[in-house]
Length: 637
Image (cartoon, one colour):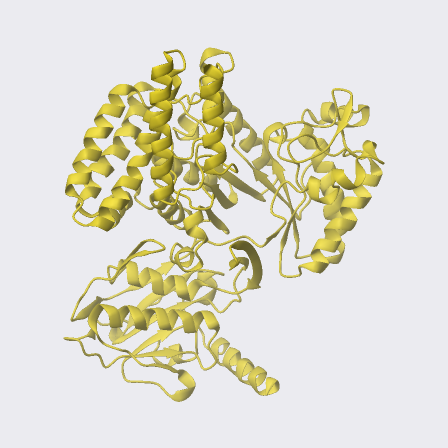
């Protein structure tokens, strides 16, 4: 049986590749001005799959069949080309039948994930290239635990079907549970000749909602095939295993050997550390052959080893990144000899953001550059924030050393996930800048906490995914479309609120980052006082008053309980700022004022829980954050 399947697959490939494809050539005699897929609830079209369809092609056909049925009531049969061809077809997937209708498609033009949508005579074609696609991770849930499996497959044909549903049929999918298919008794399609390929190789939209595999596919996001995705030093040389007997394996900081994810690093000039890490990485590759990118990256803190050997290389390279890169290159050289198609990934992050003076990344090393300290309010190329200027210099420096640069971009306020971060215009400009600078892949960290519920999470996940695929996406138009679909009539005032915040940034020349505490220190040249729990100059009381007015208008326009709930959820971002400001001001007031502020805060926490918000900051659950605030208020007494 297996030999028969292999033989049929081989015949299919030979049949396809025997065709001489002429990219971009249109057979005008066979192309119609429009085709009618459904006429008054009836259709004579058949969805035709390749003779041996892949699972993704089957899913694409099923999605299209379901969509047309829900829209019009017409059920289009699904067959394979092995069962014969129909008079009027929707051809799904790259297949020999394309030759018979004279569809001129160049599979190389579509790459690993691209798609084409064409009308040929009275037929419709939606297909991707013939390639196997990118190896990528697929999120799986098991009893609430998120894990990744890996497979090499092309999702291009599914992306093509979803693009057809959205752009030609008017379907919308604004969140995992918010899907809209317009009702039409008849469906007519104009002449189409669309080719679409992504602007970035891997496009990871790191929002909890986008972890939903179905909605994530609609967004055309990919999950890079990483094993142990980031901050892996503590995994390769765990301090609980080695620190007591081999303190010399760990970073020397202020005269003491320290390890651990948030405390220390490794001593990268210790030959035993290099040996252990090489063995560990090779073990990872053997244990997970589906993954294609293995991270050898520093722990999540800005410290580096201060021993004489490490410091000497730091000074020679004019950056700790040189010491790191020499270490990573040694592992990459070992890996490439055995696994030439595997990448080693490392970070340019915090103290290693500055590129080295001497060492270049090995050919199988990807540099993941992380603009964690920059101002997120403005396009980086236009921003006069010192940290942003430094980042742009570092990006230019890395781009001279390698063409294998990925970006870890940030799009949330870490300690205050509900706090507004008006970065929509910045996202569009910076993604385009990344592309010009040769960046290959783009990871965007938003609110990935269980329950989600940060500032405009669904909107931002949607816009980020659209921009990652197509840098020509019109952000304002896409935002307007989302507001109307997600909030209905209430979307207009909420949209005006979002753009008002962006206007404040421009009019007042404000800077803001993922770290409000950093912004305070930069402005006032000192750390925030202990009672300055939230520093957000964007949200002046005048802005808060106007924001309240807009949300009052939105609540009046919400025409059903579901939409009203979404409006109230979005309003929690504004309420968060108000209750935190009241807490902050009450700490220098009377006991009565502090008690009133704390009571209002506790009521706010309950409203968050009612909306399934489980985190107000990264990592710590909402109850832990609430306990911290209560203790802060008690200490003030």
